[in-house]
Length: 204
Image (cartoon, rainbow, N blue to C red):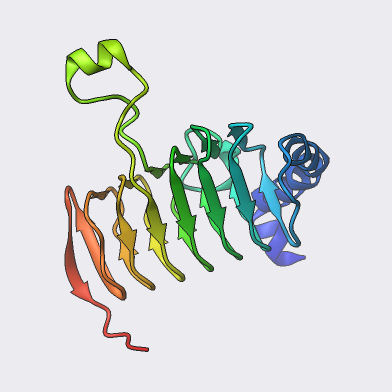
């Protein structure tokens, strides 16, 4: 009881979670997404699912979309998007994210026990062609390449993970990083563009 009184905002977060629960269930059902066990939503995410795409989420999903749900202050709700026909967004169990965006035009595959800090964006597409003449002719024909995030990865706040990247098991991405190339397992990478700055010394 004393702990609750010391952090009263958490009481309001739990009240909002229960208020959001039936709305979230309806939203996921409307998009044909199977409901998992132990899911928690603090504010409603925004789901943009192509009718001919796939979204799957494991048990223990936790999404924080409300501004007051995290001290880091999500600047918009979590976006879950499959941008094009055939796109796949698949996430394992115990996934957590605050604000930010997951946008799959081809494929984003996220393993188990992955945590993503506030206001980060993961997109497997350039959205638009780089050459201006192509943008005029086919504005939605940007290049795509799958993103793979393996188990136990932690991504800090305000990160950008770009197309074709694999984040190896147990790696950590420092806050504010722009990741343009794959990162091996069990290292810390940070910066713009992100580079390995430390080996975590974890093996097996």
